[in-house]
Length: 314
Length: 303
Image (cartoon, rainbow over all chains, first blue to last red; front, side, top):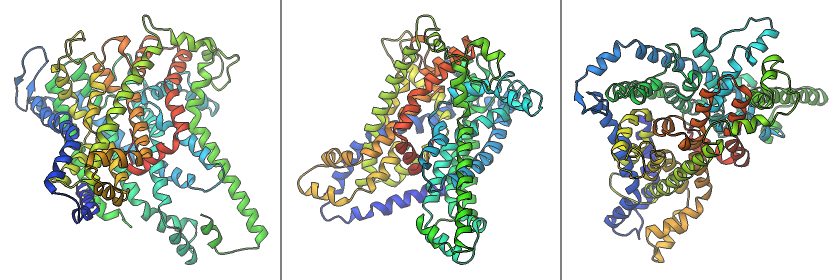
């Protein structure tokens, strides 16, 4: 959470000149205006996000099908989750998804960011082609990839030209998750590339000039100038990719539609959806969502802790 | 960029150097264009498949172009479902995405103004709290929010509450949002204070300063927020899946998923449906690419 408080500090510093304003008016009156401007946000925070997070914990301690009144069962739901095979598979699949898609996705995005940072004619058009997946719905995209992965689909046909036998990309349990990951990396690339491009363009040209004068080649400039100065962007895309990877749902839903995902592809969010909104086990689904919340929080805090060691702020 | 090129130390004879440079430049173009085409393959394949006949899809090589342009796949897809057309889904998506966008524009800009311009107690705590919601997986609040909407009465729905209506999909937007507040606050901070101070001397109150100075100057940032919110609402699957019950209320994404469940194996129609559902966003992207790029670069958020 250090970065958040740091951001808060920056907010304070940025606005502090306002306090010294000669004609700012009484502070109390300004506070009342602030309350007016913030009223919708404060209500939303209390009723739609902060409040419900606490409520979710309360619900997770009950057995509640929405038809009969809730029964308090203590930590029963959590205990049952930890021995529920489908939940453990969901946890494992989500962890696998995270561990593979985050580093691989970021590496591709970094390479692509550097490649697209060329100032050449027509680069805007070329970038458009790479950025297009940004705006597409995971639903429609999963549908297309389902067709690409189908037994008679594009991928098997391409592989056949290299003499590779057709694979069951979606129905084979060992291939299903990697197939979903490949698709998600493709769709997630543009956002990461755009962040890296912004980071690259913020690096002062003088640094490269100085490195060149010192005799640094292309590769050495990348290692000693580009990479260190890009670590804030890498850190930032990392946290977004980490949080996003825990939320994967659409692809899994479409890939299994009209059925439900097997134990090879079920993810945490699908598990929550299935229990909460198909089986109407509100307590059980809440417990699963709270465990997910805790896992994400722990990983986020651990990740923030590492930043002093490898992130260089200019 | 030009400075970097001219500053590079001169090595080798000029003609050899320029030849090498040309070769490098060509290689860069070829690689970038080839990569771009590779990224586009799913789109291209969606398009070619949508124009083939079903027999053609399974008999000919998938890499081949369609023999004729079978646009009838699009009409078949459009009218494939009983009682509704794909146009109904479009209409529902447009209504929901527009309302959510309006809500976010109004309430996020108000909150952003308070954080950027006004002084009040607990400002930092409140802002940190809002930022924290950015990194909380929203799935944690799915169940409590569902229960909340189930208890909110609505006389016009079958259930008597908000479930089965589109209300849960856009009313929340009128109660602020972390992304929009953060994005607009960054923009508001860059507006010179002197403008507000001068207006204040002339007797304007904060609301007038907000409406007459900050909102008009923040048009590019507001456009960025509008585009992102519209896209997120348009592309959302999980919430519409949870809250919408009847086919005529479905959004494009849920409609498409329903369509998929009904028409297993009818790839040309399905690809036509997927392409049509993407088209509004693709057009929006081509027209307003700079807002997308700026929004992501500025706040580093993705949907």
